[in-house]
Length: 101
Image (cartoon, rainbow, N blue to C red; front, side, top):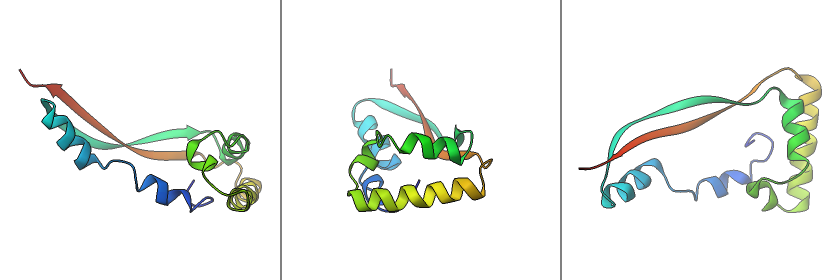
């Protein structure tokens, strides 16, 4: 999404980091067992992503100005026309915690 809507990166940077989350949960009595990055297929292809973003239901997209959103949507639509079968894969952090005894 950052490729087509680069302005949403500033919002994502305001989300709590993994280290902040680990520290916060440690203060609440949880032990951090492990963490790893997971590749998660999010959309079958760019066309599906383009169809979904048109709803502007994602809170990060809702925060964009109309001009920012329209420019990003147009870029995404063009990309979907060029490479319609490219899957959309997100990288997410998975953290496992357990409550200390």
